[in-house]
Each structure stands twice: as C-alpha cells, then as structure tokens.
Length: 314
Image (tube, rainbow, N blue to C red):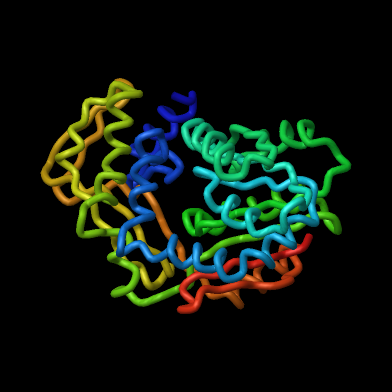
C-alpha cells in the first residue's frame, strides 16, 4: 500500500459527492481484470487501437525509431509498444523503452511480457505517478540530458483525467521532452452515441462491475476497511454535457462503512464516483494542445474512426 492510498480514499469518501481517483482501481487484481475487459466484445476501444497499430504500425514505429528513449505513461503489460516496434525492419536499432506506471504489478507484467515478445528491446521500468512532478525529476536524472525523448500515451487514459489534470500533464510532458527536441504520441477515444458508449463500460458478463467493485475489495484488504463490496452495484452513466462516461459504485441501501477509523454514511442510491472516461473531438484536441505548446504532426485512425492516435512535436 502506498502512503497516499488511504489518505486519498478517505478524503474522497468524505467529499460531496463521494469520489475516488481512477488510478486506485489498478492493483494487481484490478490490472488482471482490466486485461479481461480489453477482450470483451462490448469494449471496442482496444480492438480499434490494435487495428491502428496493425494498419499504421510501421509508420508509427518509424517515427518512434528517431528517438533514443520511449517513455510510456501507464504502460500496462507493454503489449502496445511490442505491437508497434515489432513492425521495424530486422536489425533496426531500438530505442530504450521506459514503462512508467503507478502499479508495480503492471511493471512486472511488462518486463516479463516484453522479454518474450521483443527480446532485443532494452526495458528500464520506472515506478511513478505521471500526474505528479516528483517522479519526473528522478526520471530526468535517470535518463540524462542528451537523449532524445518520445512520450507514448496510448489507450485513452487521458480521458480519465479532468481538465486541470490534462493541462498540467501536457505542461509536465513538454518540460520533460524539451521544446524542439521531443515528441508525444497520444491515443484518445472519439465522442459517440450513448448506445455505443454505455455497453463498453457496462458489459453483459459483469467484468467491468467486478473491476469497479475491486476498489472496495482493495480498501478492505489494504486499509482494513469495514465494507461489503457486494452491497454496492456498478453503474456506467452517460454524461453528454461533459462528453464522458462515468463509473459509479451505488449503495443498495442505507449503510455505514468504516475506513481508517472514520465512519462514512451512505444513503440508498448514493454513489462513489470512481472513474470518468472523457471522449474527444480530434480537431478541438489538436487546437487545445497547440495553445499549450504542442505542434500537430500527424494522426492515424481505425477503419471505423472510433479511435485516433495523434503525433505531436514539442
């Protein structure tokens, strides 16, 4: 357990409305459940992004190969970087790959996975939260000042952040890759109808519900919280005004849970807002990032235009 986990959870549950940060969904069990979600028929995001890597992977890999280091935010299992870099011609010099993740479970998974899939790739994992400044100071020292850097942020994780977090992350990324020297490749999900979006976050097999309730399981195991996960139901809510899907854990009845000695009361139907998944308009995103200091270079999409990868230079 990280020192901030308990403090952040308690602070979020004492807020009005109750909320927690989505990064806390990803312990070892949460990571394994999310891998299952990616294979669900309703979850089009992974298939759409994989299609981009299949169709355009050689071109994306060519851009990546121009840099000395690739840092991937929220790297997960490392499957995506393997799909792309495997498209390079045999003998091409590979950049050093630095998976950066809050979850040690995911970092361990990526090291073992890439050793099998891409044995020529030098993997140098880095445990850190890309939403904070401090890890970048350590990573800067680790990498040195002369190596050209590309940041890779696929998978639509940007959509989990609020507007202030996005702006802060872009500024942090610009400082890290250095103006005039680095690049940023970002994956985002496009805005769609309720009928397309809700099933992707509320699947018929109940895996997403299990993933969401795992937060309560983690609170019980790591914080000693008095809570019964089965008394909360999963809901995915369509919010057209904010262009997002929201994940909630909704209390089935009036109840009280206890976290770190603090009692938290729930009314029947009251929820914990656990995650946002914002969806984007590509042109608006490019214009917004341009104002922050990123120059649009190129974008790639799947055949159905569900998803997009965007290349920016600093």
